[in-house]
Structures are given as structure tokens and as C-alpha cells.
Length: 188
Image (cartoon, rainbow, N blue to C red; front, top):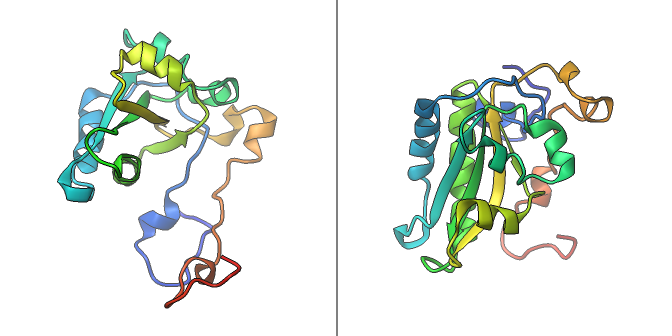
């Protein structure tokens, strides 16, 4: 995959190539693909090795799809329902004070594994956490962090006009704004 992104310092291509598209091919993923992505996430770093994350998923068209498809907000439902799977990333606030941080790291590993498999991922903060609690029957200590759409990427022409123009790799802040030796500059 080629990209218009460039790095300041040399990095592996996957970091520049991976993006969060909205255009997905409307075909389900397999259980084996889900397991492969979760296996990568299982090896993410974790404070005190608590591993306070869980991935609850629905494959497109399975018995859980209708319930999972109601979790994203109206804007995200415009595009994410073509994905091959929807995943709810949960963190366990009883297991670790750093539960959200660690779950985010596991999400990053899942996203990079999906990319290496030729799949695309898009994490969404726009969803109903209350509805996720109900659908998944969550105990109080499990926190719905994000919903992730994953699948094979489709051509941007499949999206509504207003989303089609946004279907390009986003750029990043300059490295100098994110890295400092010693004290943090006042502008940060």
C-alpha cells in the first residue's frame, strides 16, 4: 500500500500506511481473523501485566449484528455498518488504575495486526456506552471504551459525498511538537 504520508525519522511502513477509513466492503470477517487480531492485542504492554481489556465482537450478519449495529451514533452508522465486524473494546477498572491506557495500547496492537492482514480498522468514540452496557450485559467494573469497525477496505466512491472527501490519510503534528528533551515547552 502506498501513502502520501512521510516521517521525520525512519519508521516501519505500517505506521505510515495504516489509516482509519470509512469505506468498507460489506462482507463478514471470519472467526479466525478475529482470533488473529485479538492474539496480537493479547501481547500488548500492560501495567503490572494486568491486561485489563476485553474485545466483544459481532461478525457482520451473525446473531449479534443487529444489536451491535445500534451502538454507534447516527453519524457513524452512516458508514460503519458495511464493516465485516464491529468490536466493543472494554477495560476493567477493577484490574488497574491504568485500565483505559492499557486498553488503548491493546487497540493499537489490534489495529496494526489488522493492517498486516490487509484489513482496515476505524475506532469510534461516537457510540452509546449505556446501550453497550445493556447489549453486552456488562458488570459495573467493565467500561466500554470504543467501538471498532474492521473489514476489507472499499473504494471511497461507496461513501456519501460528504464522507468521500474525508477518505484520505490524515497528517500528523510535526515531531518537534510531540518530543522534547527535558522540560516541556510552554506552547505544548
